[in-house]
Length: 208
Length: 208
DNA sequence: TTCATTACAGACCAACTAGTCTGTTTGTAA
DNA sequence: TTACAAACAGACTAGTTGGTCTGTAATGAA
Image 1 (cartoon, rainbow over the protein chains, first blue to last red):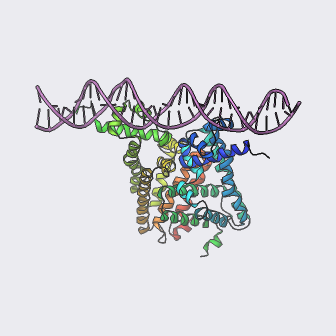
Image 2: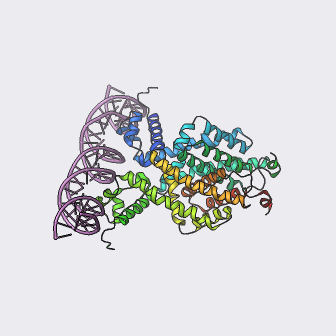
Image 3: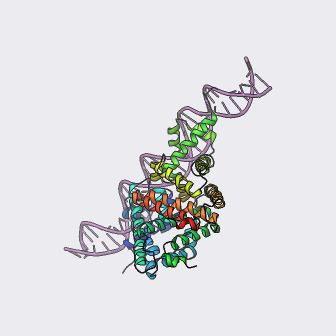
């Protein structure tokens, strides 16, 4: 188990550094030199593992951001039988938790790339689209189960609702990134809660 | 009225071309050369009117996008006494109207810049923040008037609601830009309508 | 042990691009 | 009419950056 050379780890280190660069500066602002600085590697290493700047960016989405979406939005939801409680807690955890500073200052990595690159490169757009669909369909399944268990009103179209919830989340992070104030955060939070509550069965909804 | 030289018009042409460039490629993807191509002007002209690439981008926001926000989202609202009808119609007009193709493919110019540049440059962030506040406060005033005229429930916090509506709009354009499908558009539309309806006075809301 | 292949190091290149600078023409006030 | 300032044209520069290419050390199979 000599660690003098570990190509897999080298590759992952490059991807992680590339993610950091993209998250900070966007894809167009990302510099190959900076990735090398962060990792201590040289161009020989990077261009051995990846064909181009675009290639490593694709890998960042396919491997790194995909896992991020699962770890952040999909897996934690399984802890809750009530999907609305789940979404609420997960959002709170992000807004107040570990990723607070980054998430409010730098926004959502996926949303950043969506805005910057969707219209410029079809490869980016499709990957972003797939990741969003992964996220939305996971929420959709959660809502569907919640519906069957009486947490969600039977009249709710879960596909529509899950799409709209993700739209709300992206929109709120977008506003927050630009405004950077507590008031906006509060308004987004209240709005989200109000919308989620509107998905409850009418009988429950009436309760205070 | 000799039009051999018209510095004001020259300046505006440069700003307009710069907007097109930024809208297509983002600020970091915008090329000075391309602005000159689009206008037929030379570097002497551009750097006579603007100090730098950043300077013309600021001018685009201060002069061009600011007017765009007013023309698109603020002025048309005055045609409607009912703010919910106003927002609905204005959104429909954009989604189905003149700017359809651009808006769905390229997204919202303000949102694009917000995602790309808010965290990278404080000058950008403040300008974006100001434009968003302009937009939100205009909606807030419309909702407030609507409240006084009985179109909105008296319990609604109009500041919260206007902020959240803008968040929804930005989130929906974001999703649309990445997904490019009709289904997402429908879901966003249904969700927006549902949220707007929840702002109605309870008596009206109950009606089918 | 041998040797082909993989995994890098690091110098080098070529293209692109924001910005400068000098020169020239147009407008305008005196 | 003159003279000065404003409004451009367009060649040039210097810095940046993605990517290449050659060399070298490690790895693993035969």
